[in-house]
Image (tube, rainbow, N blue to C red; front, side, top):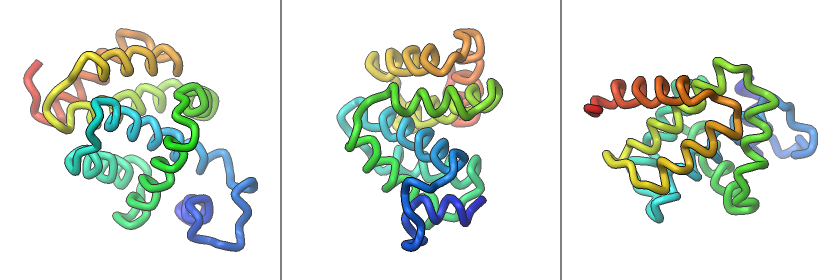
Length: 154
């Protein structure tokens, strides 16, 4: 899997971007949503970038360099489209229900990485949850798990 991700991320110059697998594309979509969550408040702080890198390493089984490359790729995709629907469609189509709930948990970790939740971030999380078909109950449970993992009191 790592070789496919590396190839998609441009580390395999011989591979045409149009030929990357759907499995690779879904990781970029998830990372792009994390970038959106991190930048929505107007600041992409180092702590948020570190959170995305850590989450990518843990959940996608990437090395630190691979995670940083994924973040760069996600930033480029995010800047290029800045359209949630593109990314949420990929997530909805290529992740099963449990994985979509896990994506929400990852997003909550990024949102809470700076220690605060603003109204725009809360709104984004509700929108994304609806767009990727995660029930409010499951979204709330994902939020609580993320807060618990980060040591944040409810």
